[in-house]
Structure formats: C-alpha cells, structure tokens
Image (cartoon, rainbow, N blue to C red):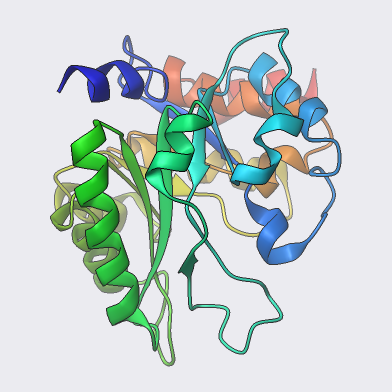
Length: 263
C-alpha cells in the first residue's frame, strides 16, 4: 500500500533499512520525569542527533512540534496505564488511529504485555487496531513485552513468543526486550518476520553499557532501536542519539561511538 510505504519511510531510513526511535510516552506512566519537562527542547535534541522518529501521546504533540530544525518522524502511542494502577501491566486504549492521522502521525504504536492477567483483552484491542491500520495504510509499531507473574521478561523463549505474536497480529515493526546475548537475540529476530527493534529499558549505569547492547542487538540482526530514558536522560541527548545512530546506521563499533560521545 502506497500510503503505508510513504509513511514508514519517515520512520525507517530508506538507505540503511534501520531506525533510531526515541519513545517519549513515559509521562502517562511515570509523570513529568527528567528529560520530558520541555518536550520541544528534548525532541529538538534527539532530532539533531539523528533520531528517525519519536513516540508521543496525543496530548503533547502540539507541545513537542518545533517548526524548526531537523525534521523527525512522529509515532503516536495509542495505549497507556499509570504506575499507580492496581495492575500497571493492564494497558488500555487512550487514542484511536483516526485521531493519530488528524494529528499528522507517520505511524502509531501500541503496548502489549504478553503473560499479563489482561493479555486476552490487550490482544483483542491489538486485533482491532491492526484492522484499522490496514484500512488507513498506517504503520504500526507494537511494543511486545513478556510481563506477568513468574515470567522472565528477558528469556529467549518469552521474548521470542512476544515478538512473534506482534508479527502474527499485523504489526509492521516489533519492539521488545534484549535477551542478553547476540546468539539468543538472533533467534528472536529470525523467528519474527517483521523488523525488530530493541528496547532500551531503565536507565543504565554507563554509556558503554547502552552502546554495547545496541551493538549486540545490531549484530543479532535487529533493525534498530527504540530507546527512551537512556537517550533523553543522558548528559547530552544529542550526542547520545548520534553515538547510537553511528552504530545503527553506520555500523560503527562501540569504541568508536564511545570516543565520539566522550569527545
């Protein structure tokens, strides 16, 4: 579909086939955390660093649109929950595909927790969303996480299942956890017929840790990253974005990216 192809080129670099996505949807779950107080400033910082797209909730699109500087793709997040909820793993729809289109979205995203108590309801909602995305030619980024009682959310078996469910139900891109090694994540990627991007997760202890994870994910065949806090809460978000983009788009090694970041 032409419309979907045009839109997805604003999310995935047409030359490399890879992407650097910076999720900034944390305000619903966590509140106004560091890095997400001045949305326009943070979006400008990652755009100048070479981010391909950002993920926002519908209410902050206007506050984040700059009208200047380097352009960046817009992915509008359709689901949410807060950390104060009885079950934060229960994600509900808070936006529609049609609303996202009216706001100028290049893609939409949805968060699904495989193994949670409300998995059935979340999967049904995803099925509804993928149907509407197909009607409008709207790319869908599915954030697929294995989360629930007794589940190891980083195990190869659990991550592989979550990623495959995303593809099976119609996602164009799947975001999921890194399993800890090139070998295990390679099997996750091989088992998912759509592009897989690796999640950044909580803020890491060192810059080298995040760059090493990105390098391993790319070596495993990932199509890029979807990293939030480890970028927008970095000491210099522009340089961190660029350091990660060097690995994703330019195939740089960790040492080269780290040297740039520290220069």
